[in-house]
Length: 96
Length: 96
DNA sequence: AATAAATGCAATAATATTATTGCATGTCAA
DNA sequence: TTGACATGCAATAATATTATTGCATTTATT
Image (cartoon, rainbow over all chains, first blue to last red; front, side):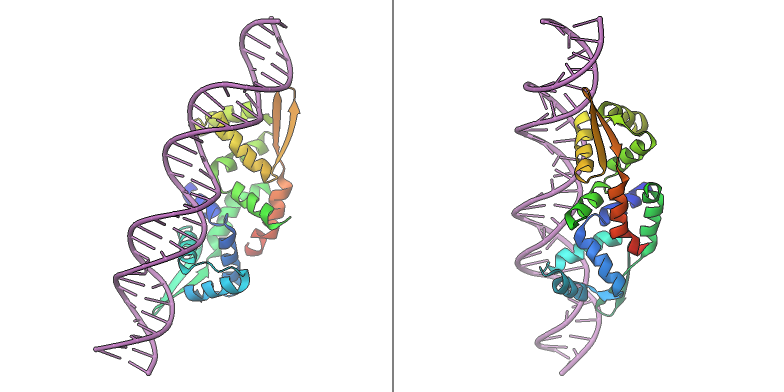
């Protein structure tokens, strides 16, 4: 992994909304965007717009933290933990 | 640790300049601001202004990651790893 | 074929972050 | 006590991030 990818990952997990998305997708993988929005409203109280969630998912995807597939008109999201673990191993681990 | 502090920590380590500062202060603790600037120039090639470094150190301090003391006119900085380890335990650990 | 559903694209606005510059303050040393 | 040293404070500028809105596209259903 190069420095820029490492940086994207640390920036991706710097936002609390994205950390909650990661948490939820770990509890229940293979969620549609629609469902992620619904869960955000249900669990966080305040509702974000669909586009706000989309942009957070884009950030996660560019950081390589997302596994995405399509089923018809539905986009299905899961978390790919490998790059997160790699980033932790590359930088964080030496300080733990 | 409350959510806001957790967030400050993850934001603090999201910036590559700050991660390098953490790395250097771990290798050689008890560095003055002046010395941190000098090392930044020496090791990163491109020089940041003293004030840029100061602001990064402020961010680290507000995240609780810095131990600071004064010796005359010299401010001495070290890294306090405990909050970083706590943040990792609170959020990151469950995904590793 | 028409409608509804799920998502994409693009522009905008508000705010936050990062780096710079200039000047001020406190401290040591000759 | 003068001058140099180490740092603080404050304003500014440039860029990045976050969230919103409106419209478009693709797919499924009736």
